[in-house]
Amino acid sequence: MDKIIMHIDVNNAFLSWTATKMVKEGKKDLRKTYAIIGGDEKQRSGIVLAKSPLAKKKGVVTGETIYNAKKKCPYLEVYPPEFSYYKKMSNALFNLISKYTPDLEKMSIDECFIDYTPIMHIYGDPLKFAYNLKNEVKKTLGFTVNVGIANNKLCAKMASDFSKPDKVHTLFKTEIKTKMWPLPIDELFGVGKKTAIKLKNLNINTVEDLALTDKDKLKPIFKNMTDDLIDSAWGRGSDIVESSIDPPKGIGNETTLNHNIFSKEELHQYLLALSENVTIRLRKQNKYASVVVVTLKDKYFKRFSHQKKLVNATNITEEVYETAKEVLDEMKVDDGIRLIGVRLDGLKDEVNHQVSLFENLEEREETKKLDKTIDNLKEKYGFKIIKKASLINDNTRSKY
Image (cartoon, rainbow, N blue to C red; front, side, top):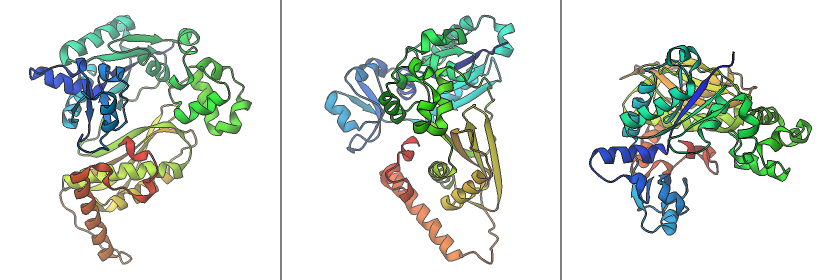
């Protein structure tokens, strides 16, 4: 029997959550004004993180500078992100959903999958359940979600994106040719801007075009990605939902990649960015980690982790990054990686350092001072003020 998988996605999460908070405080609803969530608007490089529907109509796009956004809409209102509140709302959403099923897999702060199959005998018709869940979120938490229903995770995610906000959509196997095939190729999950351009150059403009294209035509250009592209166009994907239970007393970060990656060397730049992120948070808490965990998710949505225990607990970025690379070297990436994460466990308040005969203590102290200096600069001037040379001219940092 085919499984029933649901994808729950918060509509315009950052702006919706800030709006929810302001409405509770008796202030206006940002969702009904020309508003954005963004960085420091005094800096020309401040970025638009989220936009209201009215701002979108004026041509404002996520990722552009606030300076450019205000050119399009001079009366645009800018509000700072409130990440601690966003985390609180995210937890509230996942806690609400987990009342119904433990089979909940978090994809990011604002989206998750659930396997409805084991609880269908309790709650009945999936469509009715999805509408009830969507309405409960709106009534209880004050923001809206979309729910996509399908037989696997790929199609459930595609379904949740069909039209927004506050909607329920289905994309079952029998509906792929009628609902998904007519879509523009750049709306297929996993097809980024660069891939879409290459496909259009081959006169592949819709999902149907891709599904019916001979693999031999694609392989010279897309190589290992070819099978993934064809599978996606036919709506083939994993139906395994793995419960997301965060280990206690750990600090972690992970990101979904724009395309499947088959090279460990290419994954290194993401490891570095993730290592920087988690060690900055670690140092801010004055903690040291004794275990480095690397998590991967492949194109089949299979999630797996490896870890390494350190001789000396650390909060130095370079040491965490080098350990993470060692862990990654032990892992298989042949099936294509779509998500990567780094987590630090075994946290300690202080550490007794065991000195190695081959260790340069003076150099280690200089590295610690450099990390601290970089932390201070980023806290004062923003995360992008300084970055590792290997991340220059690369969009990896923009994900964190």
